[in-house]
Image (cartoon, rainbow, N blue to C red; front, side, top):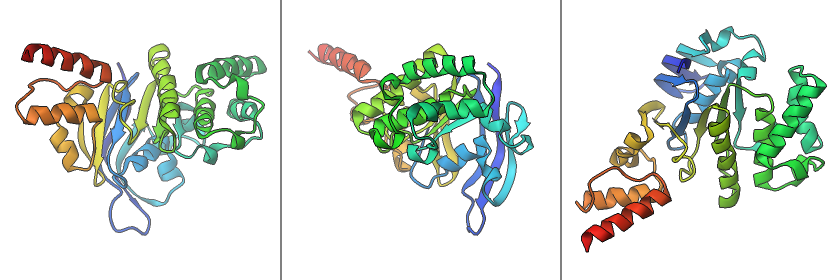
Length: 285
């Protein structure tokens, strides 16, 4: 796999602030990676996302040190709008992205902006509405649908432009459990069918962890930990000390491991946890 994002000794300080928002970040992302980014509020997660998309320093004033390269090119070297065709961002507040009066117009807007033909727009519209389950909402105003539907519209609008990198900044923060699962169902399909490069910033981890190839912990503006997902959560004490809370099943197995009742990898899904518990019960009889 080729590296498509390369961040080296990168620091960013917003104008009129005392401390760096992020400090000496080193991170590389390979094509096809699915990366989860976690950490407490204010740890620098959104700043990192905006730096990859070029919103920083494009739309923010501040002091930058180090480099952020996307597809071998420093983000500041891209012309206006060029990088955004390669890197799509879905924000936590979907309404902030809406510009049209119907869901269909919202999905079509970005495709028209990048100059797609009528037939290309039609084909992509059919693909993205089927993927996200929005076929029955195309004539609805995006402001009048449910929160989960709004988030799927925001995601679909970005996906329709087929960026090579997709960044989601806390996409489920305002959603109920069912809507949250629907968003991650779409991401699972993307991972399976399109081999997309996906970076998800998220607090609710139950749905993220089974999909992520690697995890990143941000703490106090620094990249505190990066590893493959299984190994990442074996360091649960380290995560808890820095205000990051693994899913309940991981914390449960961490707790019984601390009590010398289990010695092994922590399961990452409920199904794996259930199977492992059944095995432990059988062995204890």
